Length: 288
Image (cartoon, rainbow, N blue to C red):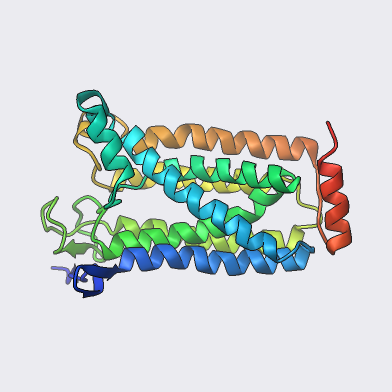
């Protein structure tokens, strides 16, 4: 008989009246704050102005939240849209923002990065290769937030490190895979790996290679981890592969295409000071 891990953490850190601070919100914010420091370090090392970091952070916060929220309702709540479109729009736009979809967040991030790159006249894949380092770290923080919320739980298992989620009332309180930890640890390892590759090979690394690598690793693992997780919505119970797995397939293909494109073009750039950054921006702005 194993001594399973009994998980009974209060998702709320403290509250004052109706206002509460929750672990998920704190970890979500920390993902952006720590990521901002990493990007600042990268920009300084490659000669880009510090004030770009604040602008990029704003783009990423808005793109992530909007993309994740809209993605959740488009991918997981579409039956509500056909039944009651007004309720669908109202719940999507108004708090509490309980549903966020990582695939929607990825679409939002890609869109935000495109708009940022266009506004600054820099190459999209140059900036995306840097930002995926912080996105991987943010993924780690968010999955830890899911753990603190006792949500996105795994399937029943008898492994010795199984968790019993006492605060989860959606599923039976039996020993389950800590699927949130699997993804959190994977994202942390990926963040360290991507940063190490960038730090060592940034002068010779083809643009787009880190972006493609991130997409392939994250969504291949997402596809695999879904086998160990309970379905998030009831309509997935009738499906061979759940929605998270189906949406991961085009993401993996996009990543593989990005790696092929990067290796084929072998286009490399590095900013070493403001002069080189300005020269690069001028070059990027030229018609192709």
